[in-house]
Image 1 (cartoon, one colour):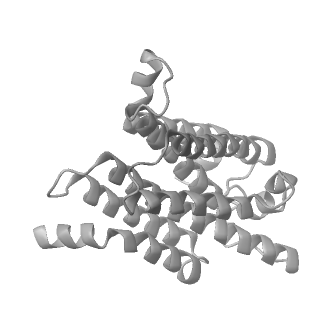
Image 2 (cartoon, one colour; image 1 turned 90 degrees about the vertical axis):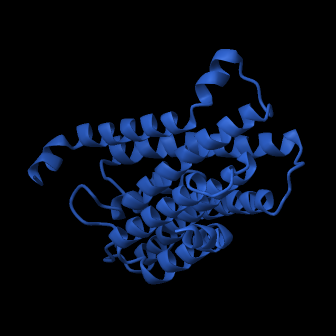
Image 3 (cartoon, helix red, strand yellow; image 1 turned 45 degrees about the vertical axis):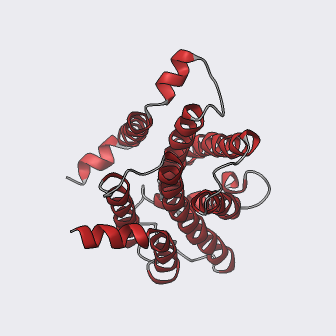
Length: 247
């Protein structure tokens, strides 16, 4: 067991890269397998983070999570970009994540909201998650004396991303009326990034939001769990009849 743990810790930084290649080049036409691979990557990250033989420094802990989450975000954005191009070049193309009248990516990808800032949102996602991936690798490489402004810029970008993801969630679920599974993957990783980065910046005093708010936002795991529960409750309520019909 110790040998496995040591190997995972030693080669952890290779795992998100392997996931990226597998998700984009091997699994991209099978959304279920992409989700399964993402779940395995998250599970391995948990093992490395919480079952390590030695205590993990907070900055390395954050870097590992950001690397994992960013890799998942890059893969989802990349696959959505490919689907966007295929929909533009082949009008009859059905996206690989269009599985039913409700769980359907094609209407979301083809909607005006999918290019909210003048270019496909998925292109922005590739750039944004790659920036987070690079930032995490910078931390992992030993950049422990990064200035407060650097951390605030990183947090600001993540906060903007979470706000944008919230808007996209509302547009996709309540305006377009379809559930895009790759979009959901983006929502989940973005909100996790938000709470993890916020808690770290508070703990290291890069930001100060007041005693009560600082204490609340330091509960990263609980906030991630609550956010996910809210998302799934809203998704269930939006199409309750459809989900019940599948039982």
